[in-house]
Image (cartoon, rainbow, N blue to C red; front, top):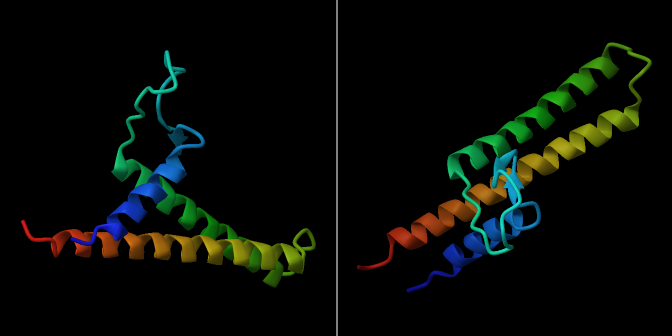
Length: 113
């Protein structure tokens, strides 16, 4: 049984969740009695908040580029390029995470019972 993809997805999720103990405002409500307190995170809510952040960066990039195209003097070309690149990186990251999840799902589904 090859579960390296599933393990890599789990380690990716753990590395994302570990530093802050909360993701998108979701997580432990207060400081626990110890460091070993389990953090309860709803996977659907984390996924939705991540996709919302990707969507927000895409909309911001579109808004900044549209402002520049309309001749707004407050928006510089480098601001437009930075926002577009950030949106591109966010989208690429989301696609790669999706690819890892699909790969892990396919590995799990191909396992024999």
